Image (cartoon, rainbow, N blue to C red; front, side, top):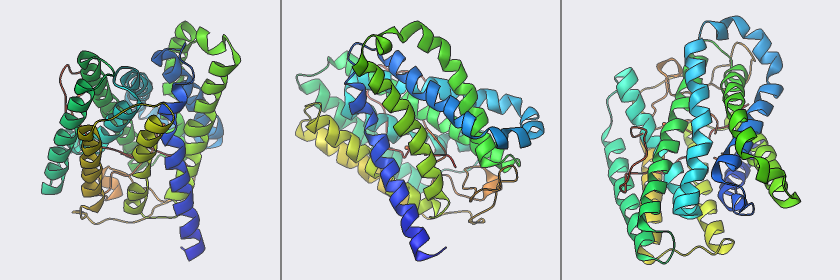
Length: 362
């Protein structure tokens, strides 16, 4: 890879992180639309667009996909759950806390998921990141409970939904990586999982989406969410991931939660106490630990997908040879950021978190 190509990849990933970081703040400009409407519009339409651009790859990979209908259905269900939990988390806990907890939980979830499904041991690096995530989440809980914002119960529920979002992101990322590991090309894997997930979200959009078309502003917000962070962002991330190492990509996408938190404070006028800022910093440290952790399994850095011939496969599955904790390789998701944590399910208490980058497509 030439130096110019590497720089282009770095620029594409940084731009993607910025776009993904705007989603929470953008949602606040459609106050009449609930989180279910925003989430189903963003990833429902965005997912169908992903499938549309992947149609040639989907046709070529049709026989392979038909042999993996179970994983595709599981990934599609996770795609459908993700935006509903993510935007619900921001609605209850605030943009800064909801975004950071949702993004933070995915890398930790990837470690748990691979431990349970693939019997991979969890490294001391993962344990350190998990401990930092617990501490950061607790500080965020204390910050919101002691402030004048949302009630403590809403904050706790929002954090619980954030953990569900992180787990859902982890699951569909793992499914996509496993599909690629079984010979399905990247574009076809992404198109199948996200297209089916988008289709599952359409009934939710039909029931809840009336406020989005009631006036120009909420409609513009929905269009922005679907076209820019969800569709364009994923395409840019795929471009970047084909030009830089997965570990570099993961580190670069740490810009996303920082963008989300700063925009929440500057644009939405949210307030965080000193403990809240400390919590964000601790969660950031957890991300740095995950990005800096040395790989425990060596594997090929790049492998073209057979169905689309594109780019390096940087998956979580054993076929890709990458260590999931050291390289929570982003695959797709909104904004949000790439990679998979704790058991799904809303919690009424402050739980662990650790910030994650959002997935992308090629």
